Image 1 (cartoon, helix red, strand yellow):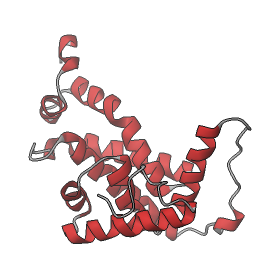
Image 2: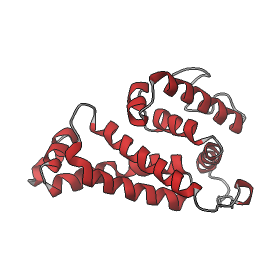
Image 3: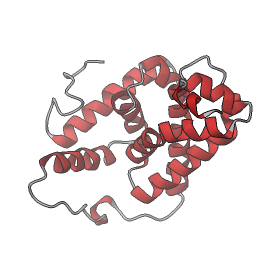
Length: 190
């Protein structure tokens, strides 16, 4: 891919990558790696497992780029791949012995960093939300997918997505003890 094409949109790059253009694939992966990792980190929670899931997602994107058909936004397809990699990592983790949540070390935070502390509070609370609800909340509130995109990504009915997002947000609010803590959205809103 010529250097001037680096500004091409994701769909063009995906089709070029699917046809074997390695530079197009590199550009796509560079554009989306942070979002892939953010989704994996929030779904999987454990930092090392999230890195494993991120790596697996990037490998799956690279190997499967030829299957991107353009029927959805490329980012939606990427989130589906990342979600599947994260869910696979959760399944693998359940087969390994783990420390109980009470035994997990608390992240070290230096004083005076309110934003960092708030993010760590949300991450810790999110880790205590059941997996199926956490995944739906992460895809809705972090990845900003609409309900139909989440339903496609998870291969579940739209009503199930709405229920999981609502229940996940409620569980997260209960963990945080703050009814407005989730994305600043009022209770019960989309």
